[in-house]
Amino acid sequence: MIIVLKKDVTEAQIKHIVEKVKALGLRPMISKGAERSIIGVIGEEEILRSEPLEVFPGVEKVMPVLSPYKLVSREFKKENSVVDVSGIKIGGKKIVVMAGPCSVESKDLLIKIAVSVKKAGAVVLRGGAFKPRSSPYAFQGLGQEGLIYLKEASKKTGLKIVTEVMDTRDVPLVVKYADILQVGARNMQNFNLLKELGVAKKPVLLKRGMMSTVKEWLMSAEYILSNGNFNVILCERGIRTFEDYTRFTLDLSAVPVVKALSHLPVIVDPSHGVGKWGLVSAMSNAAIAAGADGLIVEVHPNPEEAKSDGLQSLLPENFAKMMFDLKKIAKAVGREI
Ligand code: PEP
Ligand code: MN
Image 1 (spheres, rainbow, N blue to C red):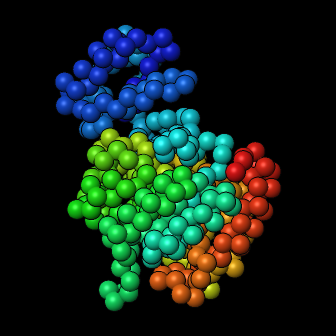
Image 2: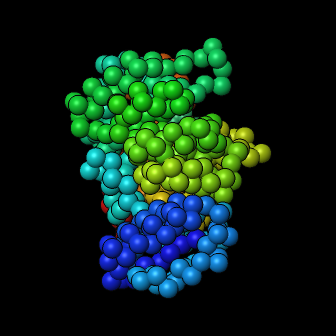
């Protein structure tokens, strides 16, 4: 249920409504918009149906939310949400590009990559310290050592850090180093992790599960928002289809679909989506043309030796060229990089 408040609602009136909602055993979530403020009510909608909430001073109308996801829906919030990552705004006019290696491999290499992607226009450095590998025998990541290197690279370059957290037990550790906590495709429905990240409050990059529908993806985001964290960025990274020329099928139609259904920002990961470096630039262009708010791209100066995902990693010079070409697409759709 959504309680739409009047334009001139006072703080005292909001407090009064919030108290009433709480007294009914429901959870109020206030969202203050530029146009209008609303109170989302979480819990059993039936309880509210018999309550004359419309008579409360400050209330304009009370509406049921028809979608299964409530807080992430456009019904709940009409304007686009902008997630602030220590000053970098994701979901506004500016396209945000995150780039870096698949895995953090060594300090020197990471810093080298960070310097090159920053020069090309990236504002966030990616790199996995905890890696979700299909094989238990493959490189699993450097763990905390990798996080320390990410922090050093951030200090040197000013880039913000996005890195994956796979386990609820690691959340307090990763929170200390990362600016954005990445939930990988394989963990999109790890509901305990999602709840923990709701409480942690740091920005979360929620990747779409490779076998998940848009609805399931948004329901996962709802777990984070309903636990108190509205700083969620969605990331389309490709889904499994019968097509096997590419690693996954990058579902770019999900971008306008999610934009219509939700107020949350959405970015695209073309690297995992296609799995081949030669296709990354074309799909980045297409993602921005489709309305994505940003990209997350894998870059490595020596893909042959990369510990993971060398096949899909761009050389720094190809990344720089891609960034240059992207500027034209961004301009054509009224955005900037
Ligand atoms: C990654 O970003 O390196 C990664 C493992 O991504 P995904 O979860 O989308 O496979
Ligand atoms: Mn990868």
